[in-house]
Structures are given as C-alpha cells and as structure tokens.
Length: 367
Ligand code: FAD
Ligand code: UDP
Image 1 (cartoon, rainbow, N blue to C red):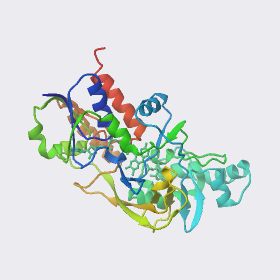
Image 2: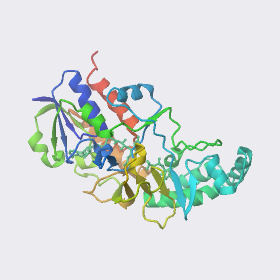
Image 3: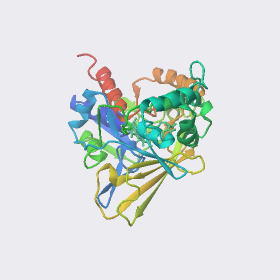
Image 4: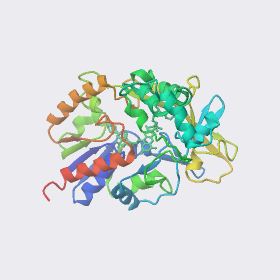
C-alpha cells in the first residue's frame, strides 16, 4: 500500500513526490509518456540538449524557489534575448529601446514615448481584449508587425477574442535591455532539465507508459491518496464537454553548420509563416559543436486525445473549468494540481511554488 499515487511526472508531480518521500511517505509515480519530466523533458543529441516540448527558460523572482531548484542542479547564466523576424527584418524583443530604434530610427526614450503615446490614443478606457491591451501598451505599429500575426496563429483566433492578460506577460521598456524577462533569477540547468527531474525522483518508484485514466481500475485502492496532474476534464471523462487547448507540433532538424541563427529563439511574427518560432538548442548552453539542431514550432488546433499544450483561458472555458473544479472538490482523497489539472497557464517557477504549497497543506498540515 502506498501513501500517495502520483499521476504525472512533470514538475508538479516530481516536486510533490520528492517532498512526500522526504517526509517518510511511500510513493508511486505513474506517467503515460515513455519518459519523466512532462514538458521540460530534454533529449540529448550529439552533446546538445534538445528541448523536446519547446524552449524552456527557467526564470523567477521567488528567492525561495531559486534556492529550491539550486539544491538539485546548477544553472548557467543564459539570458533569453529572442529576436522577432517580420518579413525578413529583425527586431529585438521584448519591446524596448532597441525595438523602437529599429522600427522608427529614433534616438531617445522621449521620442519613442511620444510615438507610442500618440498611437495608444486609439484605445479609450480599460482594454477589453488582447488587441486593445496590446495597442494601449505599445501602439499600433508594434501591434501590427510584432503581435497581431504571431498571436493569431499561436492562439488560432482573433486578438479581439483573447484575454488581455496573455500579452501583459511581456515587458515594455524604455531602456536598451533585451532581457525577455524582468525576473531577478534566470538560467538553464547545466546538463539539462532531466538532471533536475532525475534528482527530484531519485529513489522513487516510477512506472512509465501508464495512462491512469485508462488503467484507473488497476490502481484503485493502491494508495491512501492520489495526486492527479493530468487534464481535469479527461479525469471526469469529459462529462461536461472538453475544455479547449492549443496544440503544438515540433519539427526538429539536424543541420550541418555550426550556427544557424545566432540566438536560441527567433519568433516569426507574420501570419502567413506557419510556425511561430525556431529554436536553435545549442545556444541555450553556449554549445560549440560543429553541427546544430533547430526546431520549428507550429501551433495546432487541438482535438481530444492529442497532447494539450496551452489552456485557452477565455470566459467560456473558465466557466466550464469551474464546473469541473466543483466535481474535483467532491472527489475523495484526490488532489488536483499542475497546469492541466488546474487549467492554468503556469510557468515552471509557479508550478514548483504551487506544488510546494500543496505539500505544506497536505503533508505538513498538522505541524
Ligand atoms: P506537465 O509538464 O504537463 O506534466 C504533466 C505530466 O502528467 C505529463 O508528463 C503527462 O504526460 C502526465 N499525464 C497527464 N495525464 C496523465 C494520465 N492520465 N496518466 C499518466 N500520466 C499523465 N515555463 C517557464 O517557466 N519557462 C518557459 O520558457 C516555458 N516555456 C514553455 C514552452 C512551451 C511550448 C510550453 C507548452 C510550456 C512552457 N512553459 C514554460 C511552462 C512549463 O512547461 C510548465 O509550467 C510545467 O512544465 C508544468 O508542469 P506540470 O507538472 O504542471 O505539467
Ligand atoms: N507575443 C507576440 N509576439 C511575440 C511574442 C509573444 O505577440 O513575438 C504574444 C503572444 O500573444 C504570446 C504572448 O505574447 O502568446 C506571450 O508570449 P510568451 O513568449 O510569454 O509565450 P510562451 O513562451 O508562453 O508561448
């Protein structure tokens, strides 16, 4: 008999498993993929860590979470400074003085501010959707060249139908600073993310290739409690209908050249280029190999049964999620956590924080 059956070996499940074991519990992890780690999993090819499920850059403002992950793995000093390619012209991201200079050939922050302030005036009152939010943050030129096409292919719908918060993730700065994130701590685990997951799951029994939803009868009664990190709607057999997700397709290619694009991430912001970004993996770790690997990331319409990448947090889906959440609350001895079970656009640090909070509530509740 186990104390906990943990469904899913992504960061939420792995952190919970580690802490539960540390507190003396007997835990079993089951995972439907053939590897652990969820979406942070990397595959090593010719000395290069391939981010198999898209570029993952660890960044956080939480000192405690930075200290937590550094117990298990060391991080390099990678700073994400992606480039946007719009019709063959390159622009620095996030939106900062370098971008403004490239767009308008201006010199000072005051000049940039005056252009953006003029363009912002198109929007009156509180922005109601992503389009209005974007224009009121950076004006019409940047919206048209660097946001509209990228966002509409990424999410498969009009910017008018998307929530404003998605674009608020991106910093806007009137300084020459190409760091994509504002957070104090940032980097890539030296040797790849698998080292972090392997350290978390060290000494823990893991069964791979097991889908809990299909095999739940086999696991019935095997543990006192279950932590479920898969899709909440799938857990309830889509009783109220499926939640919507955005799918992704990754195409990885080996190239016989040392340096394809000179940076880890290039975003293609035009609508009619079918992929959103090209990742050149070696640049995450300053690789010096004579060859390189690149991955094109294509957004996809998602259907039930396919890998779900991004929750589409519009009001219809949020309402549906609330109905599933009510069912989840009534489910005895099952905890729901992580980006699929909470239907949440979580970054890695937030997932680790949420998992540690869950440990505190669940395992250390009586202390
Ligand atoms: P997951 O990693 O999805 O893990 C859930 C696991 O559960 C999976 O392994 C899955 O196979 C398994 N599972 C599901 N259902 C079942 C079942 N029925 N039975 C058994 N196993 C099951 N965050 C950042 O901080 N920085 C970034 O740069 C960044 N880039 C990203 C890029 C992309 C393309 C995507 C999609 C996400 C990115 N993220 C990034 C977010 C990051 O991936 C997540 O925060 C994190 O991986 C979530 O961990 P999780 O454990 O909640 O979910
Ligand atoms: N975005 C954009 N142009 C870009 C990069 C991002 O319009 O070149 C928008 C897009 O809507 C995206 C959101 O900003 O969904 C958040 O971007 P981020 O890079 O944080 O997305 P993620 O890495 O989570 O896919």
